[in-house]
Length: 447
Image (cartoon, rainbow, N blue to C red; front, side, top):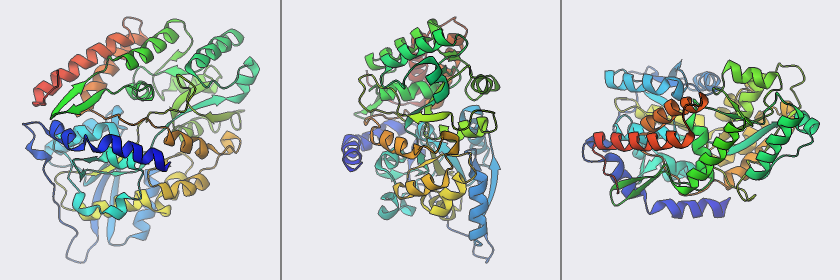
């Protein structure tokens, strides 16, 4: 882990300063340092409003409130980011009634920074606190040496599969994408109604993680400008591969986490799920009461192009403080407790609905102990996640307008589902729409 951590640190340190310059552009003076007072002075508890959606969050808030009489968290569960949560947060910030602290995933954090929607909390985050997190996480929450959020988890990729269905079809767990296609063909032949996995037309982040795993770099900051490349050879390889799987009817095409998708898993019509470390909790929560499911699911490393370990990240959540909050110190105290203490991670995971892989590395044994793996036959799934985390490819950066990028991909992926468009078409359209948004925001683009 140590060698990977510092190689990634070296790879990204040189671009940090130019990244923030490119991020802010000429029209975004709000990228300056944020402020915020500490707590109430009348002896009453500080009340923080907090918005989030991650599994286990209510349990975290309940545990924190029970142990912190000086700070009270008023929690509101909102839809997940892609399901409307980010729009709700953005609208609240514009209206001046945003929560003090809210969850935001790594891909969307630069967007919130560029819009001046979050505070620079550098003065409240010292070196000792930063050292508790994986550098991969702190590098995604820091720009130009400034800290904009605290990381909750990292989300290396993993492959979840039905052991019984694989055994019935006579297939082994694929280690390469070539083997994955062969296994998909064999599974379809043996069980004509069953597919090996699903392409999610409503969730571009899954495709982005696979592009990341394949060595693509969609956004690069160079000389105070952004280079945008959603159509490079590494992405084209992933695009062509998945288009062929779809065209040959070797995978399901269904909305992510929908009733349709869940039903296909329950009925044995989908035998695998290409997800992330948090996916174990999702499957357990959705399928744990389904007959014959418990003990039949297992977790394996993601297939790779050459069989060597490699991973992108699929999601991952942070705690950010909104720009107008006057309670930044209390907000950071809450976020620190939620992300770095055994009590915080136990509260999140013990509900059974979350398999969060902590960004604070010292908490990995705590998370492992807290998550009941009976659904996975007692498998040590956190060892799979740890190996995957070590293999996260360095060099990936998120752009400052991922809401536009992902919105465009989602719209166009819908045409892929309806067979009126292709993944390649979607990427070309998203690149064009992203560049248009950069121009609208006054962000420089490297040509």
